[in-house]
Image (cartoon, rainbow, N blue to C red; front, side, top):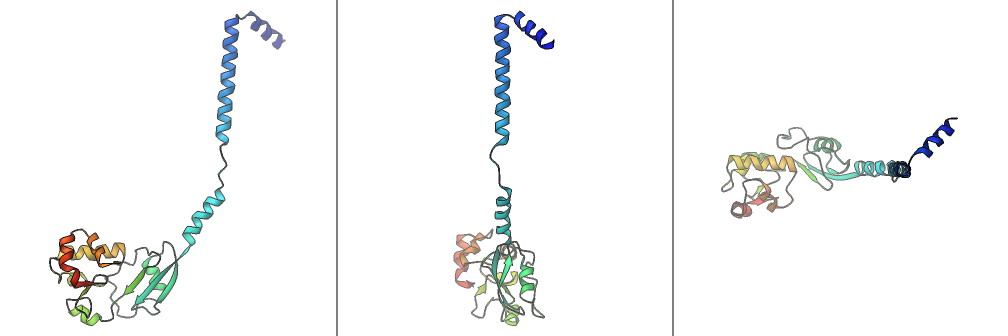
Length: 196
């Protein structure tokens, strides 16, 4: 009965009304098809994505721990490890080692060398130079030792030490120019008095 009534009502529509109803139906089917196809998309393989991320995180890096530690050497560490983790792997610092100049919370990077203390700590602590050659070792010197360099005052000296704590050891003496306040002119005046 319902179908007969519907058919009778459709026959009563004018030709324009029938075209409008058919057009609306076609548009509705097209829209539904579009959403059905676009929601499927390409399947993402989460296992491969997760695996590649975990491989990068778990990939070992090598860190060289040297100086005043119980067992100096090269140690495999997990990416994201801290300086403290590397020192623990090397058996910890030797008794009496000054730990005030090292940032234990800094993340280590692959191929890094962490040097703890100096071989001539007694003379370094009393003298103005960072090594026995009379040059200041930019990877080991204290703020006071940096102040012995021409044009380096206490503010710049502290910036150098903080930069080293935050970013790790300097790779070349030219890297000292990355510290705010040390430009080309200042570097030219001190480059012959510094070493790695």
